[in-house]
Image 1 (cartoon, rainbow, N blue to C red):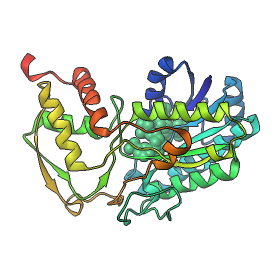
Image 2 (cartoon, helix red, strand yellow; image 1 turned 45 degrees about the vertical axis):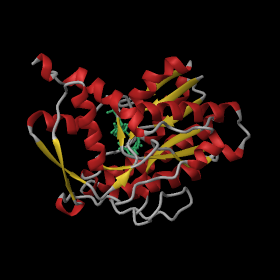
Image 3 (cartoon, rainbow, N blue to C red; image 1 turned 60 degrees about the horizontal axis):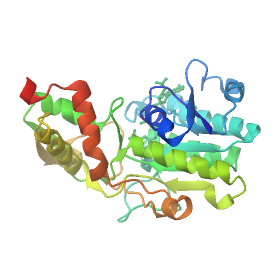
Image 4 (tube, protein in one colour; image 1 turned 180 degrees about the vertical axis):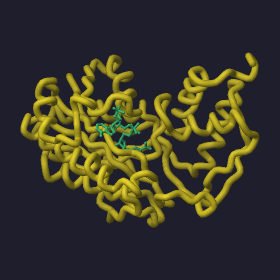
Length: 302
Ligand SMILES: NC(=O)c1ccc[n+]([C@@H]2O[C@H](COP(=O)([O-])OP(=O)(O)OC[C@H]3O[C@@H](n4cnc5c(N)ncnc54)[C@H](OP(=O)(O)O)[C@@H]3O)[C@@H](O)[C@H]2O)c1
């Protein structure tokens, strides 16, 4: 099975490439300059040349705070770009998987969000991602929208790498303790995406497999709890360690508002696609270990 993936150096793109060989899948990437969301009419010919069985749109404008001052660019990539990828997939007769986000919700609910709960993004990024979902759904019936959250990985910039870098330079790190979500390893997302794509390709007429699904790591945490687990795993292998100082989100103002509750209910994905990602506490230590091996000198060898 050949899957075309948009983007080249993104966390999910690199994770898909790493996981593909063990899943007997070929990943072909479609990225700048060939894939240009500024020239959406080029997408269909670029995609068609790859002759994929399915396409995963993992490319996005993900700079959540910068999006507040670049709404047009964020919209072009996250909304128009996503719609153009889905339209190209539809004209080639192949399924499209669109990655989306917990930021489509306002985070005020007191339980994990289900797929049909009311959306209400509180940031430009969240609004443009929601518009992307709507563009994909109107461009192709043969789609799956996978909303995920709190992605970390051994690749690119993410919370785990940031925490380890901070701990390398200081003894204490203030971390927000009143926002809750499920840390999600991009490598687990890759396994989940491949399983979903396989279902779509194997059962082209199964309408129940299509639509929106939530897909995050198992369990839940505050950012502060996640940071504590990162430092505990790091200390266990003589990596950087710092004490976590819990702070409220109001003490860490950012240009874009974040939902206080980012927890997503994953049961529909488990029921319909038989996909359930591992608990974040199971997945995070392996990522910590890889990042330390890549980026940091262990204290015992310093
Ligand atoms: N990160 C999170 O915590 C998080 C949480 C929830 C949902 N999501 C969603 O999950 C998906 C994957 O996120 P990620 O963390 O893997 O993203 P990422 O690491 O920030 O990577 C973004 C990708 O988008 C591509 N891209 C950006 N601008 C582009 C443009 N103008 N034209 C073509 N490609 C462009 C980049 O291309 P290059 O490879 O060329 O740089 C890169 O491959 C996204 O849909 C995101 O919205 C992310």
